[in-house]
Structures are given as structure tokens and as C-alpha cells.
Amino acid sequence: MAISHTLEEYLEAIWRLQEKATPVKTGELAQQLRVTPGAVTNTLSHLEKHKLIARTPYRGLKLTEKGRVRALSVIRKHRLAERLLTEVLHMDWSHVHDAACELEHAMTDEMIGPLEKTLKEPATCPHGNPIPDESGRIREEKSEPLSHFKPKDKAVLVKITDEKSDMLRYLASLGLMPGTIVEVQEKAPFDGPIIVKVMGASYALGRNVASLMQARRL
Image (cartoon, rainbow, N blue to C red):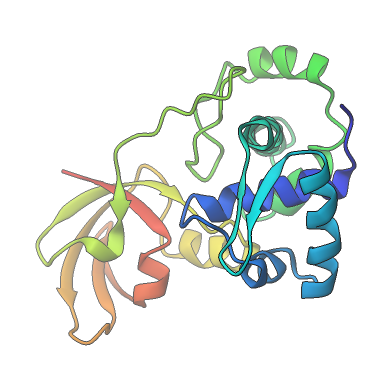
């Protein structure tokens, strides 16, 4: 069954929000997609009609198994597109998310195998997020938000969960990219900033920023 680009974007957004909490609230989805709640309601009706989501009154919504499979297919294309843009076209990692959002809809299923082979079967996107395999399985490296770490803890950054351009540019300017080793030096009380050491330099990060970086303890 062919569905529109808009519906694919909704499925992708719902999947990303489900990674944080289930069920997904309509207001959260509207904010994620930068559209009005009214527009969301109309589109959700189409998704429900196609049995791609299930809604519970006053609680929220979630993907059906059919919807999850479709969402992961879009996620797979998106993350491979990001690899294509960074590795072949040499675009900056902070700019590829939005471009990949356009490119993913133009990629046919027949293109994915050859593209993956050309890219030497990458496990993650440039931001460290795992690429689903052709069966929709995701192999996640064990990690937790950097905001959970305590002073004197050392870790290697695994992935950045917020792929907005301004956030990625900021983190890159501090050297905070997947594979980088960081040490938590201080953690202010009452949700204050976290001081981290990166390649000999120390930086203060807000808790909200630290929570967007997943890291593996060393």
C-alpha cells in the first residue's frame, strides 16, 4: 500500500516520540512536526483508517505493528540518506537531517540494497543513531543519557538524539560527537549545569542538552 509523504513523516515522528514515551500525545506530535493540532487530528484519522496507528481517547496514540514496520522503513531510508550526504557528498553533519527528510521519500526500496553496499553497510547514521536492518530490527549499543552520569564518571558518546542543525553545530563546536570520550567533572544541584571535560577543555552543559547525548560508561 502506497502512502503519501505526509503520512510517512507522521509515522516517522510518532516512532521517534514513542522512543521516549508511549502513548504519544497529540500536542507533542504537533510540536514535533511544527503544525497545528487541528492539522494533526485530520492526518491521524487517515493513519487510523489505514490501521497504522491505534488511538485511545484522552490518553494518546501508538503505532500498530503495521505502522511500526512502515515507520522503520522510513527511518532506515532517512539514516542511510544522511550517510550518503555526509560520506559521498561531504555535507556537514549538522545540515544533513533536513536534507535527508526530503531525500528519504524519493528513495525506492530497490535503491536501498545497492546504497547500503556502496556505503559499506553502516550501523548508524552520522549522529550515532542505529540504522534498522531490512527486517526492521534495530541493534542498539547500550547507553544512557549523559545527564545521568556523576562527577568523575568517564564515558564515550554513542549518539545524539536531537538532530536539529543548531544543536548539532553547537555540540560539534565543543567536540561532542559520537566516539568522543568525556569526563563529568561537576554536577550542580537542583538541575543545574553539568561540567564536562572534552579533549582537555571543560564546558558547562545544561541538563536538557546533556540529556540529548547518549553515552556508554568506561
